Every structure is written in C-alpha cells, then in structure tokens.
Image (tube, rainbow, N blue to C red; front, side, top):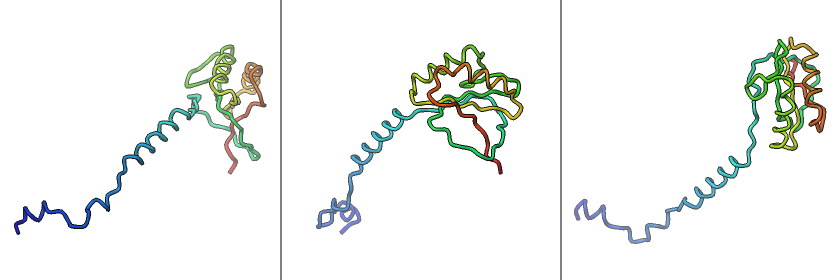
Length: 140
C-alpha cells in the first residue's frame, strides 16, 4: 500500500465522532458581546488633572456618573472641556436625560477655592435627586 492510499483512506469506525461544531457557541458569544456593548453606559471623564484631597472617612457614591471637575483656579470642566458656570446646569440636565438615575460627582483639587465648588453645586441643584458627591482619595 502506498503513502497516498494511506492518506486518503478513512478509518473504519466513523471518523466524525470526535468533532465538535463550535459555530453555535460562537454565535452565542457574539450575540452576548453585542448585547453588552449596546447596553453599557460610558463614564465621561472631566478631562483635567487634579490632585484630590485625602479623607479618612469616605463613602461610595451611588449612581454618580455626571462628573464635574474644579481645578485649583476655580475653572469647571466637564467631558474634557472647560465650561462656564452658567452652562453647567444645561450639561447636567442633558446627562440626566441619558441616565435618569445618575447623580452629580464633583472632583476637586486640593487647592480649589471653596466658593467655586459651592457655586457649581448651587447651579446644578435643580436636577439633584440626592446630595452631590465630592470625590476624594483614601488616606493611607
């Protein structure tokens, strides 16, 4: 018997028994991937580098996805853009329409003037469903 005959010859006991068709499993995986991509919500970063103050007592902010940042000069940032104070409420209202359960988180720098944070919170107060969260670092 030649090598060619041996290569084309099939075993006598059905050779397809050890094969597993992975096509249905791949279909399910891709459908799940599409589902998670479509239903996920993305957090918009404020876009300014700040050094958060440290706190000994911190609590997790529930549903806080509307993130504003106030730098050490008192400038307000939202979605990587510097925004004036009078526009903060409109931006927060638009974000609240996208995520009705969201709450406001304010990231402040260690050197941020207190009046700037107070003015921002007063500006977005009409859309607040819970007290706003102030983002801090854990004290080590």
